[in-house]
Image 1: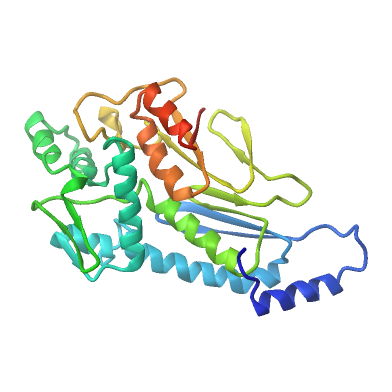
Image 2: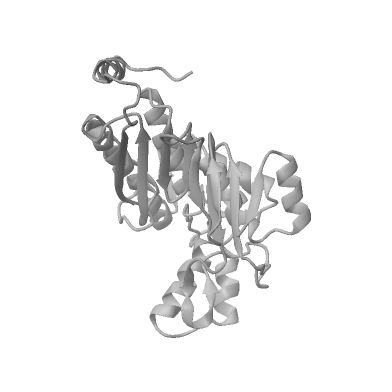
Length: 303
């Protein structure tokens, strides 16, 4: 069980003394912001907004610290330096943990989840910016740089085996950061909360309810309790809208991804990082592969 800090215990005691009747509504603190370029939102049950303010300040500092590791769009982030230089010496524990998890999911998905597809993404983004479409030769050259097994991951360094390789962590970093924020809040003694840092993880229940309601893309709602959910869609983001090219690429071949109707994969798991990575792979996977994942503790909901 996560510990309750002395500060948190005192606040809980003070709050209990301040409640003269059992009928008083449970307080709910709410924070909104941005992380890794996406909307972020946190709800904390059983704590007032004023009491939560120091926690939210701590969370904002942690989000900034982790973005400095994983962001593609900060010029001096650890990920940007790795992509620029082809190696990253003395990587942070968080970077090693995330890449180790990514490698595990890469193997468990038969290579469908592969962070080294960044050269393909960058190629199509450049072509869209110039109003053109990449030709077959350019695509083949970018695809030759794809292969997560060619990334060396050691405590002393992370290094690419070929010049021009690059990583994107967009298919796992949001879930990873969501998990880190949840654990930060658990260490502070909180038990009922919803954290949405691009992907969603819920603990306990909302005030007056059993679990937390999460909306899916088809308008349905899921009751989430002590679980995480991550969603991916082939049409969620188009890297080249003019050509209809989405942001999820099949690492193994040039043929289009498996289109489904509806096309959104919602993966439920205990950890948001795992759900995040598997949701990316799910839109590329066949029914038998997904069935095997579900037998291994995953749940995939199409919406």
